[in-house]
Length: 266
Length: 260
Image (cartoon, rainbow over all chains, first blue to last red; front, side, top):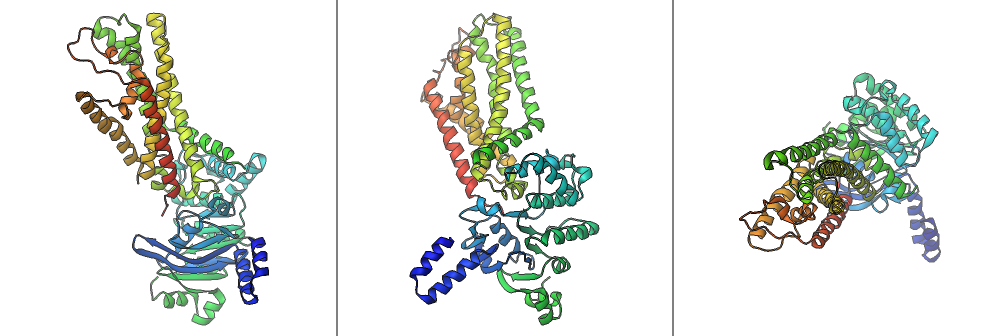
């Protein structure tokens, strides 16, 4: 892609050269969403959404129910196809090359469900091996992430016995297992008890320091603690995309920004 | 990491799933009960085993045939289950192509059915050796046809699983397709004296008719007209088409299917 960019800039007029180079720079950002639209039959879930997440940024995706948060994340994870527009992970088109794009990310979508006949250790071994991990390295990493999410006592128990919160913990373990540079998390603390929510937030805050995190949530406190930026969407459109500090200055608080921009819906 | 390596991993864990599920053992139980019913029922009804080993061998092929139909219970949830139970949120967000996932699942299901089929034919061989002191060479042909039938049943089930919202729906639709729709059409075509080798149920009959046509199931002095057994080559062609078309369609549909 960079090679093409160099060749193109050499033959284009100067004004267009600037635009091509700027596009090339944007493609290098970990997450780029360009003019993304998604229809479910006639319902427009995403309306020309564009935003990009820079390296090591933790961005919260906020919005009321049906705003398009999950749809956005599912397109990034290759679970849904956009009706129009494009999305890139580390410069890789998620529609054209989903497998390559997925190799760069760790994902939790909604409350994850796992094969009930496997144990957490077996599940993580399966997913790790699919991502090319193996041997002692994989075994020690599995122990590490199981310890990280606090499932040591349940590591060898069948998942069929697990509560929603335990599955959520295992979901986080599989998301960080391969130490991806980008984390895409959709309501990761859903179903956890208050202690679990706090623990979970601290874990994501910890691992997120060295990663790019794109994080959908309803919980403003959670987003404020983990993220430095928020993208506020409603009706599939981007209403605001700014630093939390900037939004708090402009609207007095993140809560007020949310309420004003989404027309009072929470 | 090659796609072949990923295929091996998916198939391995899917096979583990079948080994840990009760349905494998239920189907094995059904196969054993069917074989026992033939071995006990035949002498009870006829006053002894038929003189012709082929007739007993044809009757005993019911067990392995049931094992192949058990494929429907393995494969019904193979694809639909990922969407229905949302386990696809975990599996499909890994850097593995959906084609590899479907192929891995197919191979695992097929391995489980082959395992049951082999056990079924082991019972057939032991029983025939014990009763007649011989195993007809046609048993090898029956075994091969049974494996092909299992593949075609699996492919049809994978197709219905790829288009169905739920695993139960996929299983029921497949059973209705093979046993009811195909069966009824087979009966109508037989009444009209028309060929029905292109129906999956007729093609599956070849597992037993390889021993000498439908006569093996009829009393020697029957007043009824015995229908002509379908041509084995045409049955093989028919099953191969169901296998290839069903599998390719399930691959194509699963690749396009979205998980909302």
